[in-house]
Amino acid sequence: MRQSKLAAALLALLMLGGCAAAPAQRHNVAIVAKSTSTEFWAAVFAGAEAAGAEYNLDLSITGPETEEDYETQNAMIAQAVEDGAEALVFSAIDFEANAAAINEAARRGVRIVVIDSGVDSDAVETYIGTDNLAAGRMAAQAALDGTPGRLTVGFVNYDVNSANGQLREQGAREALADSGRAQVAACINTVSEAGAAMQDTLAMLNAHPEINVLIAFNEPTSVGAARALDASGRADAVALVGFDSNVETVDGLQTGLVDALIVQNTYAMGYLGVESAYRLLTGQGGSMLRTVDTATRIITRENMFTIDGQKALFAFE
Picture 1 (spheres, rainbow, N blue to C red):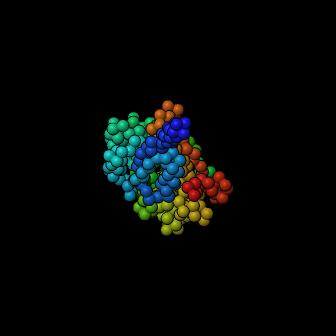
Picture 2: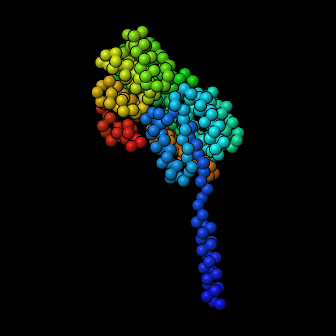
Picture 3: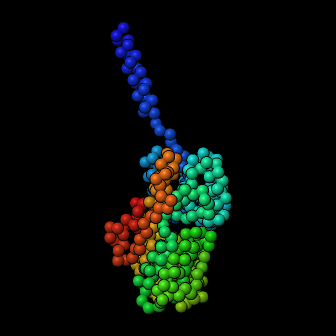
């Protein structure tokens, strides 16, 4: 009799232990990026996947083929909601045109975290990314520090409706105006693709041969601007300040084709974006900051081989 009671007690303990060890709920988080084709986004996704694994999330990653296709982005937002996403980590192609899709997702109970590029929606609970106004000022300062005398500047920007590109341009214009030794000769808004940016930059250089500094505001425009300088034979006469870390522009930094890169902490954007989504879904949102500024650095030939420089340029590796 005592043995049967003991066996029953052990069975009850095992059953209780089994209940205590039951796995926590796996939350469903969707990332809808601006694209999936650049090294910038590869680094973001590496950070996101690390956080997804750490917090035991069901994580999906989508994005259109080009950084102009906001309609496909909106369709991807709607699909993520239909697929059961509880939180959305989002980077807007178009500040205004993406807003309705985000608002609808929030209306259906999806928590919204924005990384990299903002959207015109009050549903956003936190923003994680670069202080783009400050980053634009950093780009202008890098050009001023690296170029003696007067600067005649050409801007190579991307979609005019992208919030981060416009803020970077605004910051650069302010810093150049404050310097008293620079003027902006021309500004183009090109397709966020290296080939198109190259052709449009070549046209700008031909129309404005007085330009002695180019500032390009994201990875594809920076690669395109570098190719344009190389093709035009004006690399020695025109300084180039670009954004982000790409194999071509990092190589250009070594050879002198590129003078400086404004490098964002892309891995952190992905990691912190997904971590923030997890915290919102698990009731920890009350302690979160509304805006999280990830670190941004100026990388030149002088500091690119330092430990910090290498970490910035190759964060996702």
